[in-house]
Image (cartoon, rainbow, N blue to C red):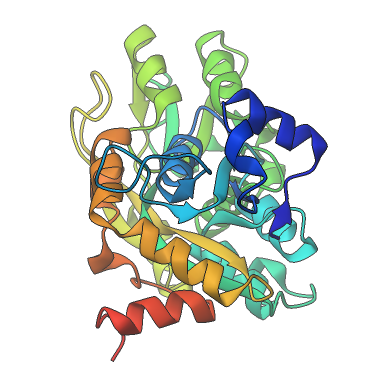
Length: 334
């Protein structure tokens, strides 16, 4: 939801030295719901927010200034994750947000894990961003070598409202378990990593693009393993839900951790159909300009995989009209 910046937000803008230009140009504030600060959504959201912003008074694009949308100030907002972001977009609490492709499709159609909920028919896609892998993390000497070994263990499934929580439950189910078969905890990011180190839990799930910061830190401080999500359980999952695919997390991604087969989903950027077509067109254009490419390539390890070539990969929710206009102009939609 685009809003003129109100008093508190305007004060922050003025503090950035934009006093002389604020009155000359309308300021628009655009939020991007991300995830926990220790995971991948948040830093990537910050890079994208920087790329699409162009506050009044900025230097011209190509002359050391921003190549974003004139008058736009975008910000990455920490959240509980995919489900939370979709709900916030539909309610108008946030302008846009990142979500897993599966979560967004189920919300849009009122199917899958959202069966019985009112379909979020105003949800729209801006772009597919990157692949996310489901990490199942345990200590190296835990004796946990498969999803089945989680039975009777203390396992963090992440917070309700996160995509990780949804997928963790689906993975348990596909392996003949449920949350009732484990002692389920709802820890996120650094809290889950710290609990594993201190012996308060035996394993935890994370759905994130690798490498994710909290796991990089954990692997440098403790001997951990990634538990494979493969075999019959993974096959059942990928066959039932087309959004999941078998994929590997390479050796060396995390210190001392071997290559591990798991499943992945797509991370995508969504907004509401009610957002202005011209604004979303300009945001999409700014995301894919050559200056944004430079920011993406150096801003986060996943940034290099965010490309126009995969901007429409696995999109199951309709494109916003403004984004669709851009993709047609550049030939990505015929």
